[in-house]
Structure formats: C-alpha cells, structure tokens
Length: 426
Image: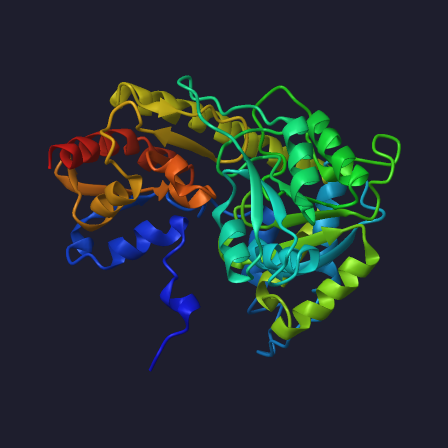
C-alpha cells in the first residue's frame, strides 16, 4: 500500500524527536534520561485542581458514566479561563471562551479561522516561533512569513522592529499577526508597549491579532503583565473584534497531561464558527474539563499568590542553570531568560561548519551516556532548527525546557559538557 505524500514527508516534531529516538535505544533501561526537550512540567498541579482529581471516581462520575460535553466545553471550564484573566486584573467582559484539547487544538482552529486550509494569505509570525505553529501551517498548506530574531554573542535576541513588521504586512498582505508575549522558544518578554504597536498595525491594515498566552504571568523582568486583553478602544481604537488568544492549563498550572486548552476571542462570529468547526472533534477531554473547571471559582488572591510563587521558582532556577551551562561549557552562548520556561544554547563558537544540532541530539538519544557517581545518564534537548522557517539559522542551537526537578536539572550542564566532548572527539 502507498502512503500519502504528506505522510511520506513527515518527520517527528523537534520537541518529540529526541524522545522517539531514545525509546528505540536497546540499553534505555540502564540509562537515567533527563528530558528537557519538551515543556512537560514535573511539578504538582494547582491545589484546587488536584482536589478535583481525587474526586473523579467518587463525587464526580461516581456512576461510571462519562459522556461527551458540549462542543465549546462545560460552562465551568470555559469560565475558568475567564476567572484567571480577572484575577490578573484583565477585563473579561467581552471575551468569548471555548475549551479545546490542549493549546495545540486551539492553534489549529485559529489557523483554520484566520487563514483557512490552502490559503493564499499567509500568517505573519516572529521567527523563531513555537514549532507547532509551523507544523500545523504545513499540515494545512498555510504559508507563513516572518521577521527573524538572531542571537548575539551576549546571548541576547535582537529586538523586534515594528516598522519591519508593518513593511511585511504591506508587502505580503497576511491574514493575521501571531506573537507570543512570554515567548517560546526565545524566552523574550514582549512588553505591553510592543503589543500596542503591533495592535495598531493590525487595525490599520484590517487583519487579525493573535496572541499565544499559555505562559502569561511567567515573566522575570521588572515589568507589568502584558496581554492583548489589556488593550481597549482608548489605547488602540478599532482593536475590538479582531483579538484571539491561545490559552492552556499546561504551563502556569502544571497540568500538561490534562490536554486542556482554550481559544478566546472578542469576535462573536469567529467564536461561533470555531465551535462549528470543532463539532467534528465532538469536544475536549471531559475529565480534564472537570479538573480544570475548579479554577472558575478560585479566589483571585489565591490565583495571584500561585502565579507569584511560579515566577519565583522559575526565576531562581533559570538563572542558576544558565550560569552553570556557561561554567561547564566555556564559550557556549546561553540566552537570557526574560519569560516562559526556556532558554537556548548556541554552539556556533565551539563547532566546525558541518556541525548540526539534529545530529548531536540523535547521538545523545541513541548512544550517548555519561557516568556520574556510578550511574549512567543522558540528556534530551530540542533542536532549534525546527523553530525557524529557515532551518539553517538554528542548526547550532538547542532549546532547554525547565521542566524536571531542580535536583535533576542541576546535573544537566555536566552531562551535556561530557556528551558534547565525546561527540566532537568521535
């Protein structure tokens, strides 16, 4: 039988590549693998959600019946996203909420609603961007255009130029502009002033304004929270009715495996048609909705305290780990984390022209091993080439996700240093 050309051309996502390779390894049972390739957080979920989890077989679904929910989600889960916004000081009055199977399903719905399959109008992104946006764009045959950010010798990404973005809008007529204020993968924090500038461009050229806010509240600079939901008609006249945000229970709330995401908008027609499109999926995970629904009635002061604690946890670990990578691998460029839970390692000062991070990651996953105190370890990271439209830009770069326990993550720099040395020598 013949596969479709689409399937023949598929390869694993950058964030799953290393895990798939490691699972094929014959000696995997004897290797302690530290997986920092994907944002799969290893911390307990929010307390109210955890309480709901324990109730699933007793108070909830005690009759053993688990039915489909309404396509846009149960009211409680939909309101959970809105209650979180309110706790963060944002006005949710005009926002329409629907629940999806993870933020990924919301991304795909957004692309269908903004551009449509086999679209002639592209989506404008900030390169590099989260790999799922480029993967879904390929799946739906939606073109993408971008302004590119590069890493300097100090580990800082180049600033985004609003004038350059507008010139791309004029030249290519995109259907919308997508950005991630708490950026995955760069770790850049996009301020509210920047969002205002981009929103004015969207209004001026009558296009959609899309913000991925899965990491909202995870920022480490002395700034205020930024969001498209902080915009209003006074700051950007005409912004109402063109805003879409991607939401998730995965990151701030440590609930990756729930697979609960959200698609929020202030455009009634977009919301209704998104629900119509999603009826083919029937609904999001019913158990996940029940658990995440606990956030709908949580007091705002508790939500605020949790977010403060999350920020402090990542702030300390991100900077400590960045310093340790630089210490263990002199000459390595390590980006400065301002937001989200990632930073990037750039080996360009340490390698020959033929080095490719994909090959190094495959080595770490398939044969690489390091003996620390009598125990064998390896490390899984994500190649940055999958986050750029032009994959050659990221060929010497790896993304690190701050997702394992602090104790295990502290081993990562030593392990990577030895793996890199072994790889280069081979």
